[in-house]
Length: 558
Image 1 (tube, rainbow, N blue to C red):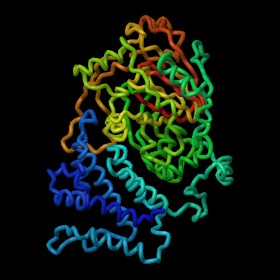
Image 2 (image 1 turned 180 degrees about the vertical axis):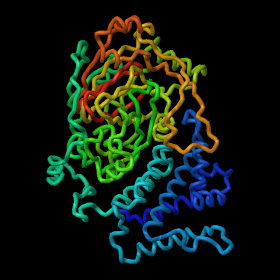
Image 3 (image 1 turned 30 degrees about the vertical axis):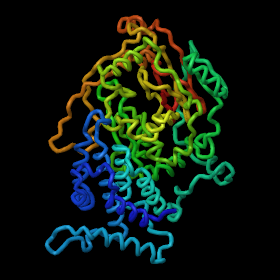
Image 4 (image 1 turned 90 degrees about the vertical axis):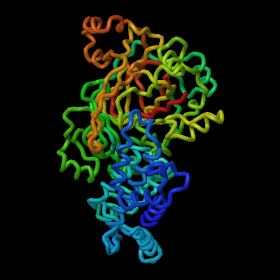
């Protein structure tokens, strides 16, 4: 186990001496000394400069150097916070007699950290009180770097910093309460089994009755690789797969249904997550916020009825219990498993995701769009076509191993996203440019799908729309910055409000008047329950509604 002072020293050393080919050098025209002064001596200024250059739409057009600058400045700011509050104050001998900053301060700071490690007095390393007021803000600094930039070249370093910080936290058991830091064991660990039996659930038991299925999707139990390959390549229809993920630790030894497990994995609820606020990304007033996982659970999963952790209790005392203004909060389409790698060990990529699938069916909207894109007539369409300052990232750039694998002709790992929310979260009727295997880990969802050959006169795709993002409230606005309207291609999303139709099926005449022909369009549907997978072929329109609070993981590939 790496000690906090050790990884802090390693982090500061890495930032002080970036590799010669590190893209960060481009930020200040390859002036290494100026870069070092900016990042080490004025990390807040470095963050402001980087943030101003991150405000490019789409996010994939942001140069990597600015993502690197934001990341390294965040690491320095977090490390200085740790040093300031753990007996290594930066003020000591930090200035020359003429008042200018002395860069050798870092040399002395590293020396102090190394002396502490080698003193033999603190064999277990630094200890931090879980009530320390600086603890959560320091975690947030590092998490924002992960969420905002993907932390290129520094993902493992930030993971190590966060792990060491959590491990250094004095466990509540030392104060007479339950130990949140106890790791979960393997299948054979009796203590882990006992914990699973007594651990309270993460989600409330509330559930919405499942609708009667008129056109159920075919279900198969533990199908062979060859049979699924034939289905994907030739049958090309949705398919429910059962009995394929029981071996996942998330379903057993490291249960994602457990409140205690999530408290452990999210540092007592302190880890930040991006949350969509509002019923649907097609609705007026929809936006995004970055908040603590504990606050997300308290406000939008439990609605103030329960308390996720002592840390979230402190947050609620400031914000008021259960204040969510009746809005829905949904952690949707987030690469949580990259942000918290320990969770990645709880799942396995289905073998089916390595099947070489067919492209969109000729003549379908996605096929025609991709053809126009190849001809250079349209910009590349995003996977979910929604206004997203926080999460509109270039998957190829953030998963360079995937790109290199594709170049070599090897199967690339799928894009993995996690979805966590209460009942009645919805994803409006839309299609994606990927094949998808959606796994329901906890809870249940109702899903309806329409063929990509459904005529536009029945499915009513949107067009180019002006979007004003409301997610910027969680990011410090750049000086003089203006929230410019954006023109975004929404043609992968239907105008039809299927959730409203579900709520008021008796108003069929009204819906026929609004969207003539839609009520007659053919569809297939299913209720996806815990441990079940749904294969969604590329380009198929699909609408998703949560029947019970829970967690899903999607695997996109092409």
